[in-house]
Length: 62
Image 1 (cartoon, helix red, strand yellow):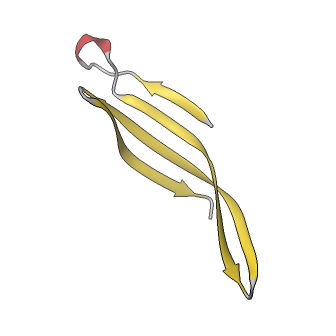
Image 2 (spheres, helix red, strand yellow; image 1 turned 135 degrees about the vertical axis):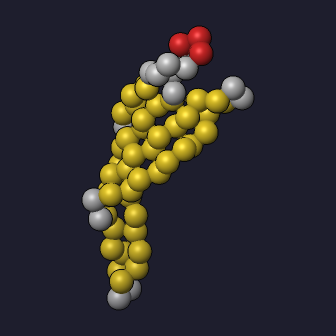
């Protein structure tokens, strides 16, 4: 997992938010056996006055 903070022209230098990237694992059953895979994700977090809000979610590589 990696986190990268984003800077912008926001008041008081607070920055826009952060990019959070990593991998997640999904499993489902196929013919009685588990079929699992590990895939990449990217989350864009927006910093707001009352905390953090998940602004975008991207899952890819599958």
